[in-house]
Amino acid sequence: LDPATGKHTSIAKVSNEKCKYACITAHSNGMLYCAPFLAKRALVIDPKRGRVKEMWGNLGAGFAKYENLVEGLDGYMYAVPANATQCCRLNPYRRKAQLFGPQLSSAPGKYRDCKRAP
Image 1 (cartoon, rainbow, N blue to C red):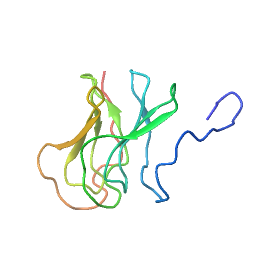
Image 2: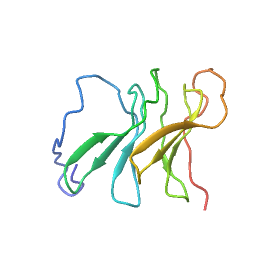
Image 3: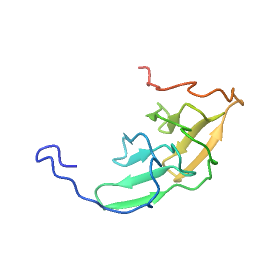
């Protein structure tokens, strides 16, 4: 999407599935990252090259797993669980996603957003 003109360009088709990703966040490396909502893998978008790839690391099935993503001070991307039972960490340097931290409640809608503190 070009903010100046409002025009959009499709750079890749990931699949016909709906609601695979619910958020997109820019990283300091210039890439865009998407945490999985219904998808099993996180997505990385290279806007300069027009490339889209799924990250390594199956994050499992489920509905509304993650609805947020933020770059941490360590350069990793983090998502807190909405309906998932663990946090998600994306490693932009190795293009790998993984679950980490303790098992949390399976109650839906645990966390809706996360922010990086200064």
